[in-house]
Image (cartoon, rainbow, N blue to C red; front, side):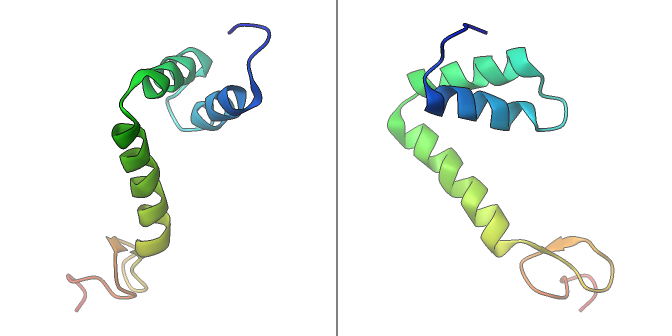
Length: 75
């Protein structure tokens, strides 16, 4: 990784490298891909990340992922 990265780039690389299976080199490649990708692609990824955190929960009974407190299987 270059010694002097601007703060937003360094922060994204650091955040991506915390994901399971993503090391620093892969995080750097993903970051540079997003920098070169169309803005709509990067915004779609950001929106998907926000949506999954806001709209997806674990079922209260079986701990499967769901958009409701009790998943469709348990209902």
